[in-house]
Image 1 (cartoon, rainbow, N blue to C red):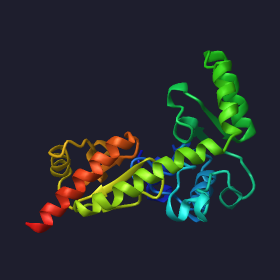
Image 2 (image 1 turned 90 degrees about the horizontal axis):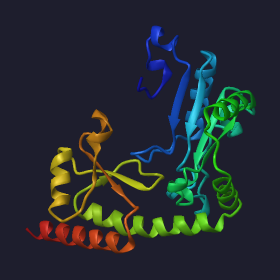
Image 3 (image 1 turned 30 degrees about the vertical axis):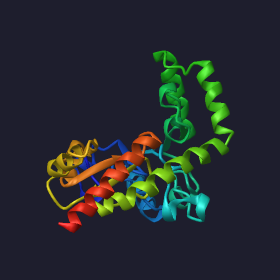
Image 4 (image 1 turned 90 degrees about the vertical axis):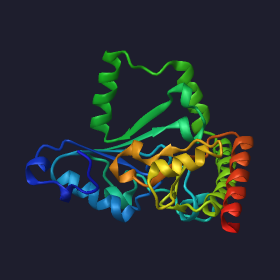
Length: 248
């Protein structure tokens, strides 16, 4: 059941909820839920006996006010005392190194939180044969004890982001959310496929917002994961096209 708030569910549905899955920073929108919004969500879930699992794999990739390396606030975790009240009961933070450390192919991730839930998960994974290989565990250990490579990777994405944003705006798009993550969520105020077609005419592929549900109508998702050369080429074409449109 897709919902932004448990209070929007009818009583019959609420009574059946056992797991609340949260995604902040979100994909595809890049929205970040501040602690003040996460806290009541946790309280509501606990009130009905549901577990909260928070997908936080973009947490190190906050921008603007969420860019801790540039004086912003760190993206809050569901395990933040401001959110959980000092107790991890009923809470799971799900994290992956695929984003911050560019380790997608390693399938390197972990879950942290409620000791009782974690113990049950460890036991279940052992019996299911889902043990992370030792070399991958060692790679994770190395990545998690080194912040320099995370910052270097983020700086790379920041340069691409700073290059793309003015080019997209010049092409007539307006950014929404996009406060964190590896994507820009943007709209030209027209049908999604019209925007996709305009990008395609410039040789640029974007993700149609409608791929992510009806709420994505009118939006496209622009990735920061292309090569520097590809990003530069896209920005140059968008800037030229935007300039040409204004002249005509």
